[in-house]
Image (tube, rainbow, N blue to C red; front, side, top):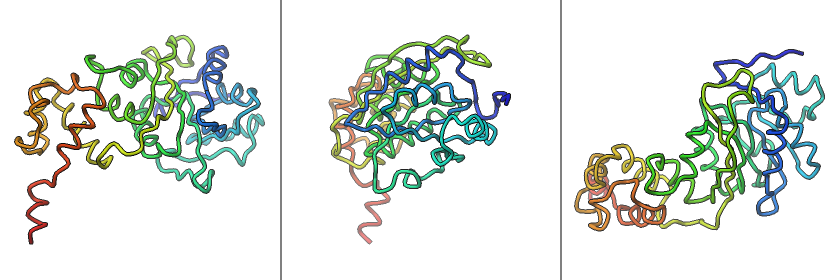
Length: 269
């Protein structure tokens, strides 16, 4: 059964078996978790070495009906462990009831890689580990620390809850069809952070506000995002977003965790 990669799904099938094996071997089973959800298995290049490890309970999510048929027809994985759905609209409880934790792995479609990471963040207390391949620039951005031009929104949000390691680079010729960019494989291991001192939605708003105008000082960028100038701590106001560590962003977010002016008005009515 011959399958061609579909451009609208961002498919680039991994053809180098050694690379797939290296990705599979990079899974640490962090916190004792051995249940794995592979995202976008395609023709099973990564699925096969994940199965061959012998110590993982593997499930896959695949939106492409042709790839689902291939996985079933070729008997690569039991059909009851294949979910032909869009990950971003899928409820993990359909596969893993009772809050069962699961590792996320995959050669992720580049066109929705950021959405996948936000999906993982939303499920962070159920996802102890992620091992996967992204566009190299995205992988580097996720793993970079402060002071770098690639350090940004995803860096801060993900590093708040995960210890992140850039593992290795994959060149274009390892795929069919070859992408126009190099790829990077990362590993994310859930850290002990549970409560960063404010709600995640507020924290995300602060981080996005800080980086949306990253060339400006935080005083200006956060004011543009709707935060009152007087609420921005002096120690941060003259700095730029890329200069703050993850912990400093936590402190800044806690200091800014005040009702917005219209919310204050509503509370007094």
